[in-house]
Amino acid sequence: MTDKTDEPDGPVLYHLDETCSLDDVEEGRAYQGYVNGVVDYGVFVSLNDSISGLVHESNLASPLEIGDDVKVRVEEIRDDGNLSLTPVHMHDYDEVYVGEHDGEEEEPPRTPIGELVEDDDVTVEAEILSVRQTGGPTIFTLADGTGTVDCAAFVGAGERAYPEADEGDAVRVVGEVETREGDLQLEADELEVLEGEDAQEVRDRLSAALDERAEPPELEPIVDSDRLRALYPRLREVARGIRRAVMKDRPVVVRHHADADGMASGVAVERAVFSLFDEAVDDTEAKYHKFNRMPSRAPFYEMEDVTRDLNYALKDVERHGHPKPVVLMLDNGSTEDDADAYRTLDAYDIPVYVVDHHSPDDEIEPLVEEHVNPYLEGGDYSLTSGMLCVELARLIEPSVEEDLLHVPAVAGKGDHSEAPEMEAYLELAREQGYDEEHIDDIADALDYESYQLKYDDGRHIINHILDVEENDSHDELVPHLKSLAEEAFGRQMDAARAHVDEVSLPNGATLCTLDVENFTHKFTFPGPGKTTGRVHDGKVEEHDGGVVTVGYGPDFCVIRAEGVGINIPDIVDELQEEMVGAGVHGGGHLVVGSLKFVQGRREDVLEKLYTKIAEAPLVDEHKEEVGEEPT
Image (cartoon, rainbow, N blue to C red; front, side):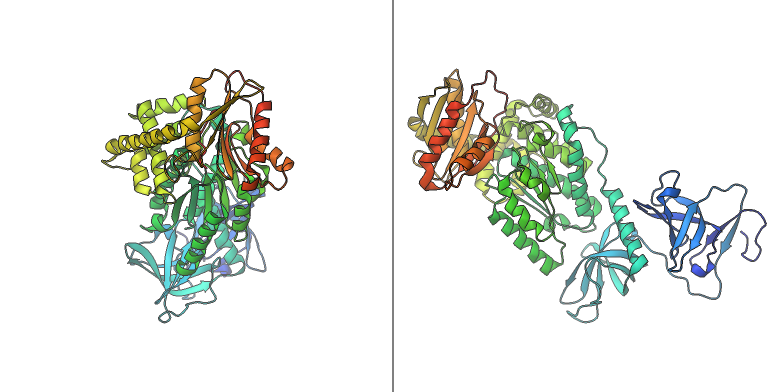
């Protein structure tokens, strides 16, 4: 070690200790530093905990990462105190250690939130995620890219501490780390709102660290599939958005369809996010109050549902200081009927991600952050949402993969998928101890129980049916629910079969119609969609040619087709244009879907629909895989 007053003649590398200030830095000298932030335009390098500068990307010969040691030359000390640095490569140099002068008090080093330890006195630089006022202290939730922590500041019971500090501000906090209800909490002695370059440096450091931590792992699909590979870039973007939300302590709201495929989708993502909460957030209860999964009965995001979600979210912002959530739509959310809900969320800057396999409308593309849908990459709905969401779950948190390997097969069975990937998923399930009959029983049990749950997530019951959570109930629960479902189907079919009307169409197809309002049991399982589907399956077995089955009520109908080349989304568009005042809307898959209309125009709409079915060509081999679409 050489003293500053005894400098050698050759190349010199200077080391600044924590007592040094900008006055100790000289242009043209080389200093030892470390990377504290990576941004698009370069890297930030610290010479000590209080002095840092920027190496512009144009001066980087190779990438650097946070924590890397680097030698830099100070090219310029600007008037505002900012340093312009360039990397240097040195050989045969001496080292000079500078510091401990003028009796200056040493500034404490900055401690990353992820390295906080109980009873330590620390200085933390971070961004405020949220502020909430309790009957005692003011609680600031802080994030610095390495983690999040609650910071308590007290000036008086129920009195707002540091009113100048608000959500989104960059702050420097000095205090002591303590434990409150099992979680670390920072007790603030001082809190300073940073401005200018200091604030920007904190934000850049946070953003860079979050980008690094939120980056999904590099994985291949769990089954060999070019269609899945084509969707992986979109899945990675959704995973990145969800991972980033969790790491910024932002709530996640999941909405999914209330059937086997939708339940499988929601549970897969739930398991991954819960596991990520356990790993990334220092809050043992976070997964219970910052993740909300809810089924949706309608095949789109109804205004009733989005209003409920938004109301709960805004209450959490006010009462608990939570940031506004991100919304994830699963097995739902791809149609123009979702647009009004998305625009409502956009008014509050709440981002939406969609993973779906229903025929999409262009209108929603500018309203969502990312849209994963097989149709967008040249595929079709045979690749179900549950299959996609297991892949998404692996990208969110790879550790959950082993528990979910049989779930894609359940999702596929629930939607009667005949996708090329289906056999591979079934084989994967067999390797986990689930034969095809068992998988089919799980799907039927999920459909039955999701109907009983109405708008509840049924978290543990659904987990036990899917067998993704340790339990002793699965082996008895699934066959019991399967038998109840079959009994309910039997009662419904006994009532409905005698009232199915058949007519031969000019194109050679058979049209089967059923008034589900008057000739089925209402308000019980199975509902109109599944009842129509079961009737349709029976009629397909009876007839050699194409079959289309329509179950109708006062203001809706559900459609199933086999061997007839109809396109339900196109039919909806045509009816909307041709029947002004009929209030037609709906959609679904090409040969599986539903329509809604005003009751007074029912006969007109059905007549037009039957005409279009009669004009559709027959197909020699069914190309579209038929799935369930409950209304």
